[in-house]
Image (cartoon, rainbow, N blue to C red; front, side, top):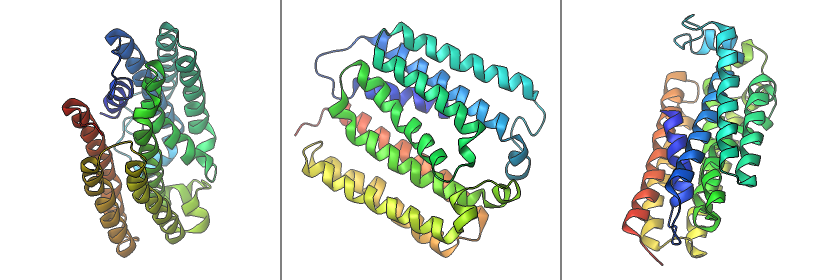
Length: 273
């Protein structure tokens, strides 16, 4: 489902409010490229997270022994290579550059940077938001898709920090240097609140700058601002109950999906300023 979401967001980056027309097979090629690279990132992350997942998520494929570790490693490399080859087929230097950078950064994130204090969270947020950019650079659609790139980056960063709170016990056991394990869950929550405030304010800023109409701004307030405030209030009260933190983190995935769907609907009905 995560990989299909990557495909969807890349296609949205290519087609959103595009007036001059586009080439459907190019958008599909870049979408599949993003899908394969994301899949490679998920697999290599599971490979390097094997010991942690035995504690945090023992139901996953590798901890259950459904796939051998070496098989997972070579499978991830194959997925990265296929994604890069598809990017080369677009003959767009920016797409090729993003494909190479994302593949390398996802591999290094899983191997080393995930255990860094902040860089790992930024890499994940960049890779999530760059799927919109990946499609947009191929169709010269940057200005139309800029708000979604910004929302996606900050929202993913918020969700990443909530996940650090969720994974606190396993990360502490494995001596992972995350914000939560070094500064504690409470400080991590305060940092999450700060980024959430920027995200909520940006909904109005983009509207005032003419990126979308007031009707879409009001809808985004309902889909971004209101859920974020509710999530933060619940987290502040039940910070030490891991089951609740886990549910909030998963709900954030569906919130991001709803935001993307609103932009798709906006494109279909073609609301103009």
